Structures are given as structure tokens and as C-alpha cells.
Length: 315
Image (cartoon, rainbow, N blue to C red; front, side, top):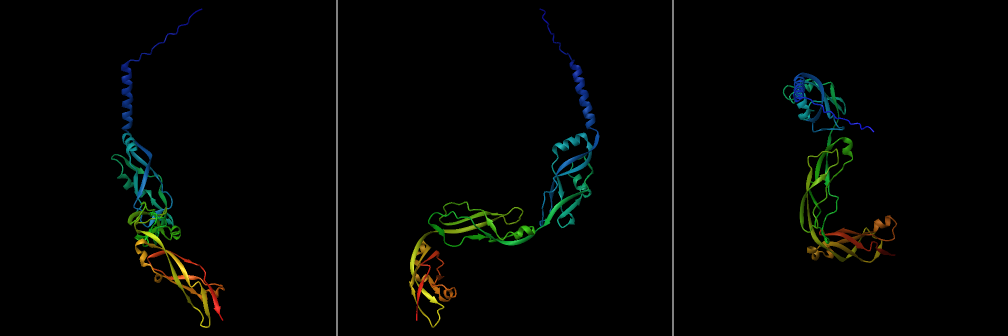
């Protein structure tokens, strides 16, 4: 058998040749980069100076094609380091109720000032930039708090929660504002509140709605509450002069919540309960309905037992 032997030959390229080739390529690159070129470049754009009474209905154009002229060096460095171009919307032309535009020829001078030295704006191919913008309207709405209060068990508010300011002015397009009659706050972050408590909370402003007021102050006074019960006599009103009634029972039981510190201040005189005969008669009811006419401002969660009062008519 014959053995075939392959001999690997190494390619010997002189280092001088490699150096000459590298120098030639570098020289060629420098020569070409130093030449002047006119080309179209797409730049990221941002907008400013849109009037406060206006807002975008759709996202405006994010890029703008610009024909520029400069050396290859400048074009490369500009692409690597160029910040977004800023365009003022202080001067807008109106086409339709929600359609506005700017003429790009009016942007050449302000854009030129944003470019590095040696780079010239030749032209902007697109003759106009269009924007979908609506005129904003405004109205004043109350601020409300609809979340549960983080009170410690057995505690309640001694007075209604205080919101300051209690209303805010919001702005948006007409259709959005029609659907908004109040602005809610974010929840309170506190836990186990047992005393006077104040917190600044953010407003829960719907998307697309603007408001200079972004937060409000909430103040509450939590006190230890207990439950009380009293017997209160029932007063009969609107009874015709020619009728005499006997009611059963003559007293009702009233249960209520009251601050522990004010418990001893509540007496039967703190309540007044009446039954309106005429109201029951007009509805054909065979019974009377007891109603609390007056309560102390120190009590809450008032409940009456029984809910119906029977009566007997004397002939």
C-alpha cells in the first residue's frame, strides 16, 4: 500500500505589504470621509410650547427626515451623538377643528441652530407636519374619598373627614369632562388610626385629564366609640281634630354609637321621635312609622326598634 502524505504550505505575506495595505485603506477612508456629502437623515423629534388649553388626541410624529450637507466625518459623529431635535408648536395653522399643521420650511432656521458646526440643513422633504389636537375645556368638581378608613377596631370618626382643598379644576376635551362629576383620592396609607391624623394624598386623575392640583390634604379625628341605648317617647303629629288614637308602644328603643368621652352627655332629650298619621293614612297603611326628627351631633348609626307602631282609633 502507498501512503499519501499531504504537505501544508504556509502563505508567507510580508509584513511590509500588510502595513502598506493598511495605510492605503486608512488613507482612502480619510480621503472619502473628508469629502462633502448631501444625504437624507431621519432624526428623533420632541415638541414643546403647545398651548395649555390644547392637547394631543393622537401621538405626534416621532421622526423627521432632513436633507443635510456636511463632511463624512460630521455625518458619522452627528449620527452617533445627535440629541433629539426640538420643535416648537407655538405657531400652528388650523386646517379643521382638530387638525393643525406647521410648515417645515419654517423649521429650517431653528433646526439649523441645533446642529453641530459644519452641518447644513438643505431641505426637509415633507412640506408639512400634521397634528391631531383638541381644544381643552375646564370645570370645577368636588374631591371625594371613597376608600375604607384604616381605623383601629372600636374607633370611628368624631366628625366628617375633612378634605382640603375640597374641589379642583380639571381640563380635558368636552366628551371626557361630561363623564366626570368628581375626582377621587388615592387611599390613605396609615394603619390603625386612633387619634387626629393628617396625610397628603395624590388625586386619582383619569387618563387624558389635566389638573394643576395633583394632591390634597386629608384630616380626620378618630375617637373610641361605644354603643348606647335609650327609651324615647313617640310624638303623634298631623292627627285630625275629630280623631283620637292610642299607639302601641308609646316608646321606642334607640340604639346609637357615641364617642366614649361623650357617652354621659346623651339623654332621651337628645332625640325626638314622631309618627306622621297623615303620611300613613295617605298610603293606606294600618300602622305608623317612627322617624327620628332630631339627634345630637355627637351620635351616629342611629337605629329604631320597633320599625312600626300600631294604633287604635277611638270612636
